[in-house]
Length: 421
Image 1: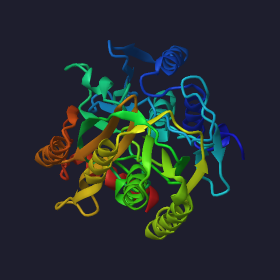
Image 2: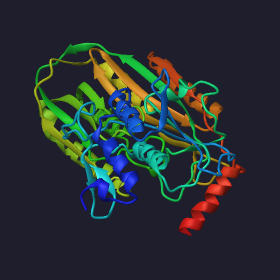
Image 3: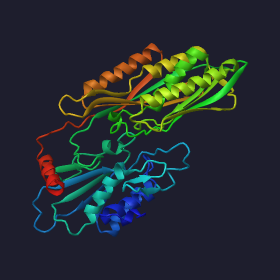
């Protein structure tokens, strides 16, 4: 079986296949929104679009169900656009190349799949176009730009919906129901550095940390996967101390809400130390492969010759930059006291990028406890102040507190067990 449209249930996979065929990264949802509007017209489904771009579909109750409480199905149509460094793909123009593996899982070829949250939207579409389901009044909310700031959610207005029960379709794992969500906060640090000439007697190399799994910084942070930015900074700190390397550039990660799976640095090394430098990188790679043996079987650290850069970072500046990134928190910071297996507070050191005398560091903080989220922001602010760096905290959004006594939760639990045991 090679086509998604051959999978069952048919409506679900046909809709998801179509979503994958239309580019829809965050902030570039115009094409997919146009398709969904036309789709609703063809299916004779009522739809309206708000000023932000969100779509609200509605379907009347089936006969005899008019007095039931209305249900709102909610998902987002934008996707995280991340790809392997060797993959040629323009997320604003190219369709997602889907692959059905021998194990039955649907994946993408070298890119993110966009099942977050394309599969949720496809499920809602399947309900809208179904003719064999008895139901009360249904509304479907499809928001935009969830992955890069929740612009769509923030653009919603009171009294836009009639339904009393809202079901979030943006979940990940089979057999699990999401009953809450952490709030978030963006932290952006900027560290200036002097650009100086490259001393004589140096050899240039490019260091590449690749092969990491990456993943969603909310869903996958608990899995203990490697962060490419943290790994390359550990290596650079050691190389500066032991071999006197100088850094020309750093480039790690690409998205604030994705665990970085690749990071690169261009460095120069004294000619007389290049062999020892190479041996050190090789040994460090072995240490990291052992350290992450349970989570990152494909972790690779390589060095290749490269052209001599025109400038490098000043020595004091590069030490400040390395120390800032090294000191910033990353990963799970606290587990929930009230729900087993739930991350309460975490942070993802997502992006480190140098350009024209400035290193930009982007982190995404998450917590279901607002005070804990604020405390992590203050910790990052303290690191920035020590380094005399600029820090901006922005994009804060609140959490969704779980209600374990929710009637719809109990109904969902019973229904799931009735269907699947």
